[in-house]
Length: 147
Image (cartoon, rainbow, N blue to C red; front, side, top):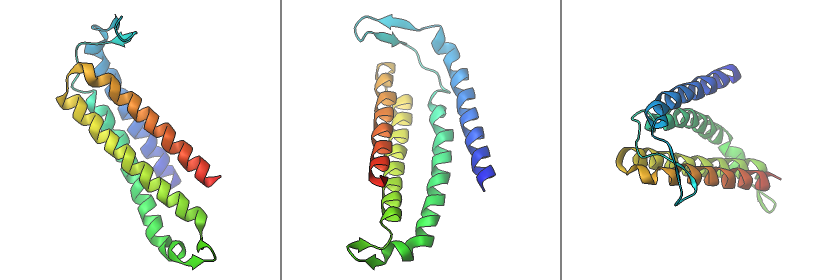
């Protein structure tokens, strides 16, 4: 199973890299520096750039399904009440934060795809930064709760 997960990860992110490189072709010729926002920007979009979010979403859905399977398998332990709460507080925190992280990141991926497909190019910059910020907050939350 570990080899399958590692292989799936490598394939999904390799596919993402290929789609990104393919999508940057038309965008690369149109890049310019914006004095208004003090960053590089583009005024065109590529049809394959929205697909960059599909492969990682499939991999995360696969990991979430493995986590859901583990939750169901360990439900007897997690739901058992010991002194002062759950008899397995580590599993409770791990599963709770993992499910929360998946739901937030899946929602942001869907939102990013929606932005790419329906919104003007000027809104593209906000999607990636919001996803990075949410990812940092979620990872920090999981780490702090596990510590």
